[in-house]
Length: 514
Image (cartoon, rainbow, N blue to C red):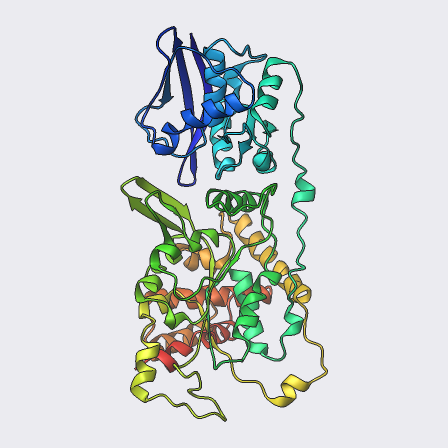
């Protein structure tokens, strides 16, 4: 007897529909799986047999042959166990399904006890199954909340195989899992940190506020203990909430990485990733035998904070260059080629030298001039060119630290960020273009949306010649100037806007110039 059921597989961030065909004939008992299965898929027959035995569910007699279609696509992982259970039970005459099997999708891993274990990437696979025509999803109970995010499908969370078989046969009813979008998307900024905690550093706060408005990359340079890490860790508290589409994309990346907590339906807070400086280039960009997302993709739609930037390996720093420009990273391995999105804000921090006190007003630097040059030259010019805002974080005086004056809270700063972003969105919407932030402006769009008055043009011309800017550096100053103008709700960029943008980018000449 032939049975056809549906499942789904995973390749990178893309899911794909899998047709599970099971043929059972009266012959010497055997179990074969074809259709390019990997070891985990081939081992599913042992998990399936043990799960049925220990759950008191009869296992079909005879010869079972399973085909996973499309047969030319590699099948990896333990996603297909649940579909194999239903396929073998129906092909062997042990199960008569109530309902249309062609509208159902089964995804999950079986344990020897008959429990259904969670898998990674369930959101991506359910989206692919819906696109293939399946509208009823049977997934592990711990993944059900995640799968329920998808509109237009009915999701059942399966705890055990007996529970599933009883539901399919009509002996008992399972309750579908519903997704409460409003409750899941209710964003709380109570992250335990606030910009009110940071004394002084007005210019640094202004720079990070501009970065939040335009999604600009930032480099913070200063001696130890000046608050560089404090400032960076509070950046998510002034960023606007994720839109639903951004939250869905971010959740997909965390899901395939196995980082989504059990029972979690949607990631609604912008990611903040702070990898250690010993991380390899593969850890940052992604990789492995089966390519998995790296830190830059897990930080998608959020912040990637690289503390002690010069301490990262040269390969790790240089691997950031193309993703910063393109917003995506492509990883090619023997198992295939995958592309992961990685539109993130890069916030990096560094000391001005190895001892940390070069230029400090009271503490003498112990580094030789040659050592200082070697230290800062670890950061290449092309990488610096991709960092829009570069500012110095000075040491605080006693009076600045001891003041009773209250600092601005994150909520106050975020209100200005939201207002400036709304102003920019209105401009781009009126022009009929889809631009999420000023940092994403292309060269033609810069010419269109960054008009300058004559004084601003003269000031920028002088800076271009004096600072030896590249074409990319010129564009990035204009993007920051556009953001400064948006803060002032001005359509035409003035000399004051350009001056502030230049001021936010002049340190590459102080520390990295000749």
